[in-house]
Structure formats: structure tokens, C-alpha cells
Amino acid sequence: MKKFILLLLSIFIFSDAFSQVETRVAKIIRGQIINKATNEPVAYTNIGIEDTFHGTASDENGNFQLKVPEEMVSKQIFFSSVGYTSLKLPVKSLFEKEFNIIKLESQTYGIKDVDISARSKFLTRILQLASENIPYNYISGPINFECLLKRDIVTDDTISKSSKAEVLIYDQTGYRNPSVTDEFSMRKYIIRYPEHHYSFASGITNFDELLGLDWARSSSSILNPALSEHFELNLVSEPELDGGSAWIIYFKQDHPTLSGSGDFHATSFEGNITIMKDDYSVVKIEGSAKSDKHSRQGKFLAVGPGVSDYYKDVSYTFEIVYENLKPDVISLYKKYNYAGKKIEETTQLIFSDVNVESVRQIFSRDYFSD
Image (cartoon, rainbow, N blue to C red; front, side):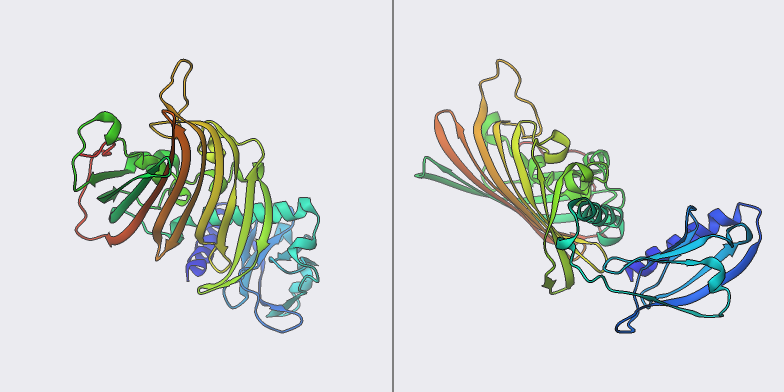
């Protein structure tokens, strides 16, 4: 259904652009895209007239129609879909029938068998489509998320401390306008611990660091179309999940950047992202990284010269799972040295409830616990 909405939007955009140019329609081409071997419909096939921006896409049943301006009659029309060999035909050849059956051949090789350059472009395109479809795949605001924040800290393998807190998140726009700027300005929160903390040091929550892993909300890292081409990409597998077929894509930056990893001092950064094939929704992001040092106020901040109060020799893994149009669980496990002690932190943010009706507005970020 989401793709059908996208298709209608696509057709509207093409139609609107076309209507603003004084031209005459020579013919309306109608037809259906099918698999040549099985005769099954091929949904969401890209259809366009070569060397122009004029085109459309087939719907979920493979059906399409395209208005052809007179000045494009002599051109070629192309049909392309993931997993099929692209096809080009003269536009005029489709004028002969009222309804055309276009047969696409399945590619006889897997994505792992194509050359590295072609494979990278294919995977980059999947990531770009995942990014473009974020507003359709996740919930819009204004919205409240009720969450449980759990944090376990082990010092020198012996001293253990656990804490829990209730968190109320307010997001004015939700996932409608994913960007770092929109996420920071529109998403606020309140953290309430059962116990009270009285010092600056013990009150640091680093909650922004946890929320920063929600790349779908901020269109960050591998989900930033401007950055995806700067990652090494490989297809891990194409599993069948409960919701259908998916791609699991491995990503890596040999020389991590702040914009790519979200970590100012990262020395390694890699992970996997799972994307559903039917609507390009991201259902899981998992990764690992190492860093020489972390600011105590968050890994995205630099540790300046002369500063001695910071975490050293940091390594961490993280995971975010999305369900029902929202994050479900964000997990972060971090190891580092601080003040001569070895620290292990395990933090989880569990999204327990969603409210889109009686939304409570929050105006600030609760950086420190009560």
C-alpha cells in the first residue's frame, strides 16, 4: 500500500511537470510488466523514455500507463527492475497495441556474482530508496514515546551497578522530515530515575548518544544518501523474515568519519543493516566500533588538547530494532578505561508505548537525571 501511494505521488509529479510544458500527447501507452518465465506480474518496475526525465513505474500488479509527447515518439523506452535484465524498445513499437505485455527476463546470476562496482551501485541504490521512504515507513508527529531506560555498569569485573528510568519523548514532526537538524530541534525528552543523583558527574545520562543510533530519524550514517557511496558495501544475505524478503547489507568505513560513524575519534566502524524488499523499510541496524577516546558528554564531541577527563580505549557494539512504524529497542554495549578502572556499560532503551492523541509537549532535553 505504501508503494502504491508512492507510485501515485510519482505519477502526479510527472503529470504536473508535463502539464506545465505546452506540448501535445501523441499516444498513451498502456500495459503490464510480467516475468517472462513465470508470467507473474513484476511490481514497481521503473519505466522511462531514454535521455529524458519523463517516466513512471508499474503498480503492485505490474500495470502501467505513460503519456508520450510528440517530440519523444522517436526515442527508446526502457524498463528496469531489480533482479531482471533491463529492456529497451522503440517507443513507436508500443503504439501498435492498445495494451502491451512487456516480458522481463530474470537475471541468471546473483548479486554476489556481479562485479564489485555494479554490486556497490545496486546496494547504494537500495540504501537511497530506504532513506527516501523513511517518511512513509515510520510514524509522523506530534507524538509521545513512553520508554524504559535500563543501564548496567560493571567496574573491574566486580563492582556492579544497575539503574532504571522512565523516559517520555516528545517528537513534534516524527519521521516526516528525517535529518540531524530536525531530530535535534523537534525531539525533546524527560528522564525520571527512581533514585536521585546530586553531582554533575553521576547525573550524566548520555541519552543523546543512545538516540543518535536511530539513524532513520536523523537520516544519518549509512542512511544519509550523500554518505552511502563512501562506505564499503556487501550483500550478506537475502533472508525470509516474518514480514517477507529482506536484504542484509554489510557496511564499513576503513577510515571512519564523524558524519559516517557519529564518533569523533573512531578508528574502526562497521555493521549490518536489514532492509525489507517490499517497502524498503529498515528493520534492524547493528554495528561495532573502536575509538581511542570518548568525551564523557558523548562520542560525537572532540576531546580537546589538555583534557584528561575522558574515556580511553573504547570499543562498543550497538543495535536498533524497528517494529510497528517506530523503534522497538535501542541497545548499546560499551567497554572503556576511565580513571584507571575498566568499565563495561550495557544500556537499553525500550519503547513501550506510543501516543498520538493526547500528546504532551516537552520543551527541553533532560541532559542530567534528577
